[in-house]
Length: 226
Length: 289
Ligand SMILES: Nc1ncnc2c1ncn2[C@@H]1O[C@H](COP(=O)(O)OP(=O)(O)OP(=O)(O)O)[C@@H](O)[C@H]1O
Ligand SMILES: [Mg+2]
Image 1: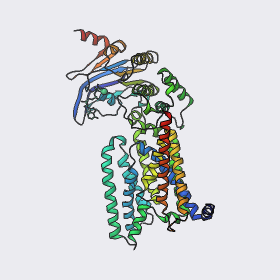
Image 2: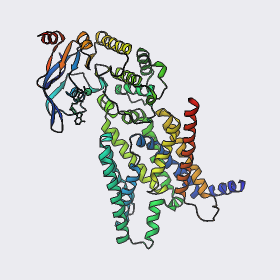
Image 3: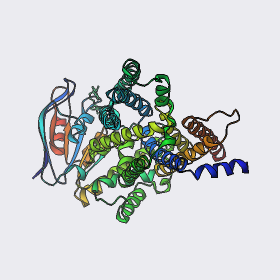
Image 4: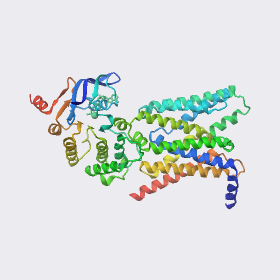
């Protein structure tokens, strides 16, 4: 059963259309890669799925059980102002907030989860550092950790490999693959890395100017060879 | 020195001085907690703007001869705060210009109204009081202390209960919204608290100096500390300490023998603390390298 269905979506800003005619659906456990050149509307689509932007037309329906607070998100850009005082740990912990609960402190379980994810992403030693004083790649890892922390059903990543070194990129793909296969978490990843997309994803959405493609990775490969 | 201390001790034995001290500290606590959020949301001047709006509303309330001016001032200020802060980050640029417009507009209108329709004889004195803080803080009654106490407790409670959400919404509103946090509600909450604190704090330092009470402690804390929790705690401590010191100083006899304005003294102490913290921050930077 489809977890998320988009019908005839039209995306844009203030009347200017960026992409239209998007119809696709994903099921629980799918791994969707969104491809397309710069400015084709990938990030806009991500924000629309997350209800940060309104679509110009069309509809998005979520299956029963997929609440907004079960979604993890890695934005493409996070504008953080200079000298914002926030430690790495504080930022990653904020990914736990969507679990709710009235008790105004993070639980021990939350803290353990955060610690585990920090270890996985190799940033445990940065826990008490100030976010603004980290390198670009380190910052990307922190935001990734926050996204993983928030994830319960679906993980939406907007160019997660941006700024990561080669080993980091490889590790990242492995981690995502693992939570997709083992925890059956649905993945939507925006990427410019075609090779990785084709080897990991189960479905591909290619945003193009004239028309967009949606199908399984096999169908996409078949189409590309023609 | 000990003579001065004795004099302060003597002064504090009067209930009016004690009340002023308590109210001043409570207000400073609220303002400095709120300050961290406002500074980080790049809304430092919201306090200034809102207090001008409150001044305009106060002028109208005075002319209408309302028995309790708060009944008009508070709702108007809350409404404006919500309109300005409602969109959070997205309204930043637009918000700035609107704020300036509103602030100057209400200041001018308020002054005009007081002059045209004011009944009291001493217009200049009244205006000066609202702009730079009143001496009425010394004529506070027990109910005023209670109102301030309840406000402070409320703000404190909100910060303890929603500390994590306030962090999330200030740090990255998009992520918070995307993962199902009701950012609109929290923006609304922050706006309302801001308006309430501003209106109450106007009594202490007046509408021109209010920004100082809101921003200085936060900025001072941010010089030295690099994580959110430490900054919030430090800001509260700095705010309270500066208010305490400022009020006591203003009770002391001045060298020229003239009365010392309490609001300006508190702000001056805040400024001093900020300079010290900035120096500590610099020192920390150099010793780390
Ligand atoms: N906030 C905005 N207001 C107006 N137009 C926007 C806004 N954000 C993006 N756009 C426009 O929408 C189009 C699509 O942008 P989008 O960020 O979705 O592209 P993208 O596919 O993610 O590109 P990239 O590969 O560079 O990340 C662009 O032409 C851009 O100019
Ligand atoms: Mg993009």
